[in-house]
Length: 181
Image 1 (cartoon, rainbow, N blue to C red):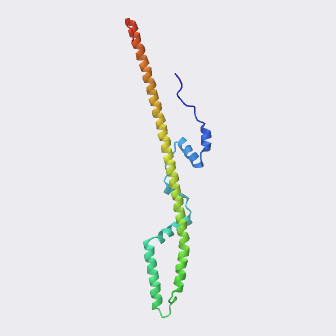
Image 2 (image 1 turned 90 degrees about the horizontal axis):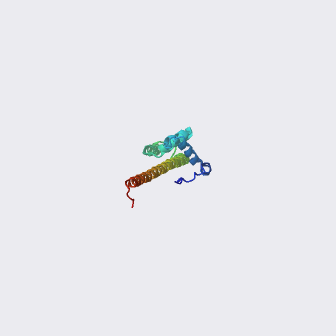
Image 3 (image 1 turned 45 degrees about the vertical axis):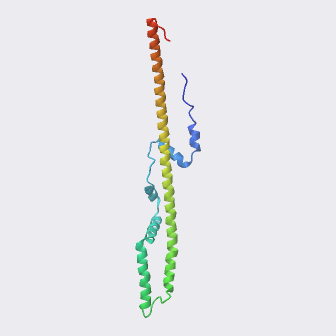
């Protein structure tokens, strides 16, 4: 009987060719550690206080509550300055324009910082999805190999059993003086 196994691949050489994240995944697979992680939890752990504040400001600035309160402030400002005898910001509301410009100038970078963090969070989620998919693929391949090995063992056992039965038939025919045709 001949050996049906292929030569073992050089695992160290294969691992050296992997990227950083693939090597980390292989290490977790070897340790049988969990690969699936929550990207939200992992991302939140990395945020600084300033980043958390920027996200809260961006969330507030993009809400209907902010729009409603800001409209009330604008209309209140204009009404007060048109009704007062000595308005602190008379028409055409130059001070109001300055305040609006300042709010826009501060709000835009905060929103952009928040969007950049959301993009980083999306990339982290995609990376974690990749790791889970890779582990699933490796597990499926392992199961396929296991099934193929079991099927091969069953085939070898079946052939051995058939040979044994054939020898038994030959022995009985030889003992009874009959011939096997």
